[in-house]
Image (cartoon, rainbow, N blue to C red; front, side, top):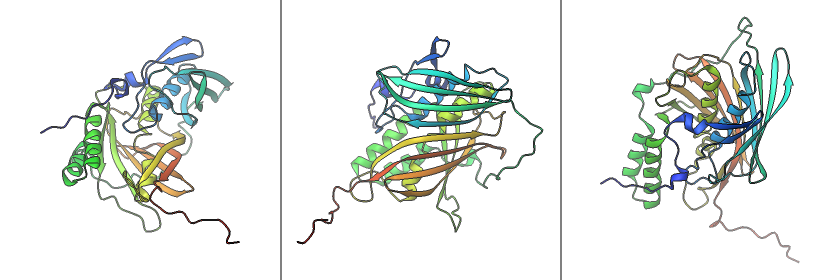
Length: 319
């Protein structure tokens, strides 16, 4: 028997990635979101959607001879899906080789997000190097995220966990992004566990490189900060080893490929070098299926455990 988990319509992820990224231009440097999505169990609008919409806004203000090479942003407040976000673009620099933009995202009069991004006239004749792609099964040989969660749902008797797994399955079927999990990833002896998955945008045409980077900015926030909680061995539930809060604080990306196609599978290699004080850092590398390193991502986020059942030692003096 199929179990349906209802999600409010204004919180559903759109089936077309172009709809999720779409913004309306109101003035030369002013843009407005057309749609917003709140993931299941999230505190606000999906961070990757805010990043990508802000990036689309910034890219629209830049001459096409410049290519995005980096972005840095901070998530300041959770965003509602019921009120449009306004994106204010500021043209900070117009150089011969580099040009820079900042974008301030405002909702209900409050700044909720800030983006800085830089564009460069590509220099393909300069020397280059990159870390090789890990040896992993092809995407065609990896299970989909839906298949993995279906097995988890079938193997648990916990109704809360089962509902969560079934909800993820339902969300992924609607999502414009397909994900295939790389199982049994190797763990280097001197580093924490590496988590990898293949990802691609469903049913998209061959977009121009500038828009491909906006799509990748959206996708780069999927399953990213959870790398830190998984490295700690945390899960959803109640108790000292469960997640009480998980939310992105900032996000950065560096692009080193101008010709990737997110309509084909790309490998996301994620690891968390450190966690502590209720925070965690994650690093990610994105490769195309041919092994070319296309982008590098970094993020810090809140990763808090549930201490409600843990007794706290008194700090009161004995005198």
